[in-house]
Every structure is written in structure tokens, then in C-alpha cells.
Length: 423
Image 1: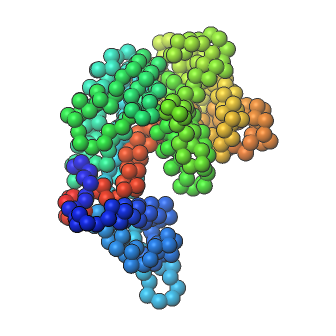
Image 2: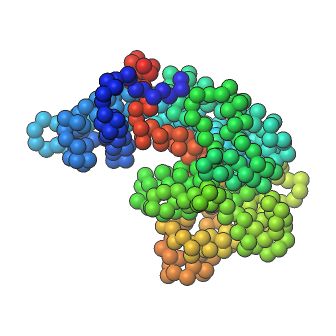
Image 3: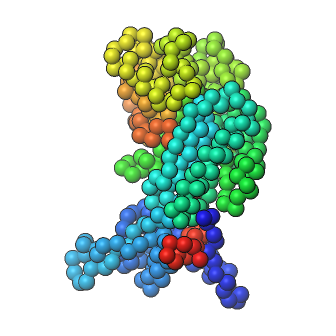
């Protein structure tokens, strides 16, 4: 079921500012419970500055909309009758994220509480297919996720599509995806046509940006960082920057193309047609070129990327000299480019995603050494290197999260719930 606006016809004389204030207060309460966990109504009132009667009314509406639910009694209250806690629900509201990458397609559907409804990745040699064929397959995968949401009677907040290339911020149009071999293409328009002109919101974004948002949410669960750089590696290398808790997109939405920093020696030609790009020495093809021969199964794009990387892991664990040398070289180059980013941005954390995370046990030490040697600020500017646990699911998780964020901004987008269905 597509998410509805949930607004009932009301008195036309009600001031627009009153409606807006109500909507804002619903958002304040919902985000407060999401960020700080179960709270009693009295605690929410004290924390937010809203009066108790208003909070009770807001909580009642959020419960009706299926976004909050009654929890256990507040055991932390020492005196008087314990209040009832309210906690995030949202099991009936879902967002979908889907990703096109060079050698796979992926999709995930999450509910508002972050639970996985569906997650799937299929190997596909996208770089050697025409865009129309790829988008046909992609639409089928998105359709599976939408059907999974419908099957549980859920409301769909939206679908966000991740693409490894330059995506114009305002329009969502793809300008260039060099590793896919795609030029200008209105991915959103093409996908809407294939999905039957759906009524739910559909957006397109850069895959590294979405992965950075997912990594930020992952880290914030146990570490109060506000600035990070995510490096995500596959055939290409992308970067996502979060500064002050907000994604850095740049003037036209083209930020994060760190794989094309000209830091490598001239030699191997990059997917963009230039030489000297960072990803020519740290992308997965660079590692495979150094560690394997041309007929090695780990080079086969018809196999799932994690299956291929498992072969590299086995060789590294067995002490294969060629593999370990290749990993050390890639880790060192990763640190050289990473040091440039740390010098410029001074993040709290440098996060390794994609294949960098999978092979992190061997890449991290040479990377950290290069950062220490090349960052001018003492102790690497205080930047820590961590590996994301999301692996190749980061972009689709971030896409689903973006789709769900609008509900936290405006909870009235979700219809009031009766026996699990929106009114």
C-alpha cells in the first residue's frame, strides 16, 4: 500500500499555522523517541518543553498512525505511580532502497524501526549491458520489494535509487556513470515508466552518499561522532562526507567523487578515460590485477562479489605471498588518498565500506600508517579508521533510510491505522 497523506477534511477556518505547528510538534515527539528511546509522556514533555496535555494528544495521534506504541511501565521512576513508556513502532511503514552497481543489483526494504523486510542482491555484469536491459532487471527487483511491503499490509514511504555516478541534486538526473559506461540519463523517469507510474515518491541519488548516511546511522548507535568520511570500494571508488551531522553534497550534488583524485602514477586507464585516478590503484580491479591471473574465478563478474572476495580472504588467511603483497600495496595507496581527505576535512572517523570493509583486516594497517605519515596534524588529526559492518548493503540501507526520513519530518504523511490498514 502506498503511503497516504492521512489528513482528514477539516474546518476550513483552521489557521494554516496551527496545522503546521501541530505537524511540527508531531515530528518533534516522534524524532525524540527515535533518537533517545522509550520515554514516558511526562519525560517527553520535560525534555521537549511541550506541556503534558499537548504531549498526551500528540502521542495518541502517533499511536493511531502506527508510529508509536505503548511500552512497559517506567521502572526508573522512584516516587509515585509509574508512567507508561511509549516506544517507536512503525512496523507498518516501510522505505525501499535499491542500487545499480557495476557487477550487481541490490534492494532492501526497511520498516520505520530499522527492521529488514526484504534484502536481496543479484550478480549482474551491468558494465556490459545496455542501460535499458539493466533498468528492466532493476525494475523487477524494486517490484519485489514493493510487493513484500504490500504483502505485510504496510504503507510505502518511498523508493530511493542509488547509482554510482554524478547525480544532479535538484533533478536527480544521472549526468555520468563512467564505470557503468552510462552518459546522461533520466533514471527516475525511466524507472517510473517501468514501474507503472507509481504514486509513491521515487528519488535517485549517488550510491556513496547513501552509503555514508547508512554508515553514519550505524556509528551513531554507539559513538557520538558528527564528522566522517566513508570510502566505499568496488570496481569504482566513491566517497561520502558527513559534516556536522549533515551530508555534504556540494553546489550541484556532485561531491564525493574521490576515486578520480589524480594521485596515482600514470598508467592504467580509469573508467572515466583518464590516467592517474586514485581508483586505478585502490579499486577492486587494481587488487585483482595484482593478486590474480586473468582466468582466476575471483575475476568472474557473474559470481556474487562477496563470493569472489571470500576467495581472496581464504588466500590471505593461508598466507599467500602474492595476495598479501597486493593487499599491502592497495592499503598503502588507500592511505595516501585517505590522508589527503583527512588533511582537508579532518573527520572524526574514516569509514571503510564495500570491499574495503571485507578486506579491512589486511588493508587497515598500511592505510593507518600512511595516514599517520602524511596527515600534518598530530596523531593523524585525531581521525580513527573503522570498518563498516554493512558491507555491500550500505547504499540500499541508506536509500531506504532516506525514503523513511520524510515520515519523521511530517508524520501526518502516514494514515491513521485501523486493524493494520490506513484510513
